[in-house]
Length: 169
Image (tube, rainbow, N blue to C red):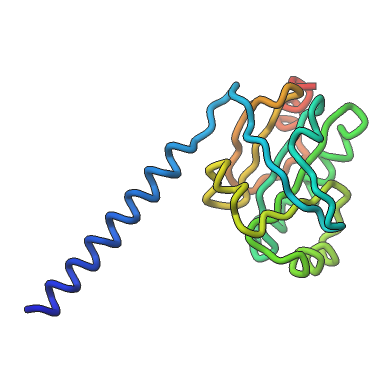
């Protein structure tokens, strides 16, 4: 009887913690038109980069991890999108989530990309954005406002995404 009570109490506590976690995440949901949260992160050369460094550009902030198959699948099309619009003021910023730099470097040996990669080793940036699954991307306009949140892996090098970028450029 006592064991059964402890199991029920433990499960109740786990459910309560899960509900509180979900409420916290849902309160962080960003709304279109509001300023994208500022961040500061290291790149692979140990240089500090901020979102504000890209002010005046259209930014596609992509949260990913090297252990995520869909993330790896979409990387070549993200790179093609970046190369297509880079000269017009567009940048893809890859935000590696929860990984040490060495893991990211190993991944980049397999997948060749030319856009900037930043590190969110402690998940503080993904928490600020309310990102809880990957890949997840945020399209940010030239003024630094959130234009759209896009969840899931996509072939980014296609007309519907070109139209989104061109509308913001």
